[in-house]
Length: 365
Ligand SMILES: [Zn+2]
Ligand SMILES: [Zn+2]
Image (tube, rainbow, N blue to C red; front, side):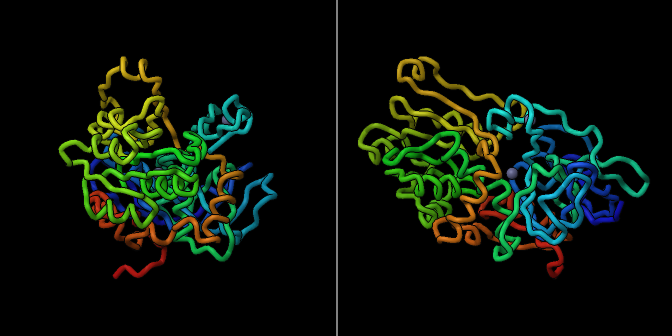
């Protein structure tokens, strides 16, 4: 047990509260990691607003980097001091999904009791299996991946969700081929990574669609070949023109907005696939015409956390970054101390940021 400061959600929709909690020592197969940096992901905001329910009080935060503080029994691959990223991908390694190479869809049961409690000994939920809006976390070893000493934590933490969600959607779920035409709806934290990945995959046209001119300009610096405003009278017509009249082989929906989901099929080429990474609130419904999907041989597929396999995908991303092909630092728009996490969340919701990062020990000024 040790005391840590954490940003606690006690009521959906209310500001997070910085409190001192108790964090359990790592048990068998677990590690404790001191968090150096944790990014604000849209999923954290949706949870804190109550979009998907879940127990309270809770600590969210799942896009983190830091150093191993302690290892539990049976852990030999890590030692205290090792720099790592921490993700929400917890996998048992033995269920049909894990054995089939899809740890993101692990069917194993997670521990009923998390490692967090408050000063009175009452349990506090480990949100997103991580609870990284805190000075330290205790997590299963499968949730951790090593990073080099040379990569700073505030850039590395982005690999834990935003980057792998975008890259994995392109590389693992869609398997975008060289010469494919790609549309990316939403040029935010995940969308910019879909764009960088589509460029590495050799896509022909990469068309970003967003409500903001500033974000379309951003998208071009990450590799988009074109930008179309979602508020144009006929954005699908613009996409058809850019793609030789065919439409896109892949349409990535990277935002959780229903209008984005309902517009997406209109951008598809014959045989095209809509790839769904944006997460609307539970119960939200979208409408589309099944006859068009059936007649045009089109499809839709969900992509959670980019169907990432940490041990396979993180080393590749680190190499691309080292060779200058994958932007990380450029994804950061603001740095905040933990005490100002509510400001970081408010700025993220305002929509003009790429990723805001909480840097532990940063100046509260
Ligand atoms: Zn996330
Ligand atoms: Zn499993």
